[in-house]
View 1: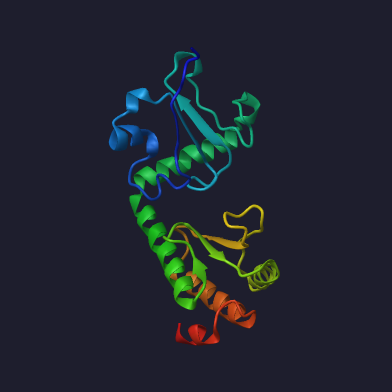
View 2: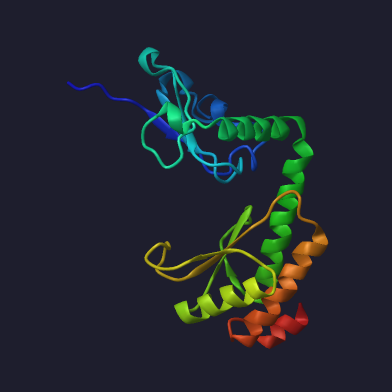
Length: 206
């Protein structure tokens, strides 16, 4: 019988939404730490760099890797700049927990503001706030309008979306101010109302 292994993939925002980094997940949540063979995850969201990691307690695979867009660990891909910036980001997350509180405040401010304006958002606030657009044409027009107004975010189009509807994905960080987020909400309201994505009444009420 072939051997089996247990792999745990951490969420992209662990370390941001929880006070502990995810190495202690299995022990804290499932009491199965000793049974986990691999923990994998990405650096592109919570840490803000590129690549990812794979850690294991197996003797023959005791290594960590930062390997952008690669399924295997390859030393040439473990670039010093990626490793150094990742370590620095992790250190700041540990030493400055107030950054996590500020990030969650900013995420909730943007999420609550977009929801109040009448945009279709996800079920909960997170550092990446997605708004669903009614169709591809208005999604592209909204993205272009926001870009020209100085607001950059990501545009996701089908089939690369969960329910085959276009998405605008806005990211916030602990460095954003309340004034900046309010300015973004004002721009969303103006362009969204002009394109018929939200009702002008909700824009005025907000």
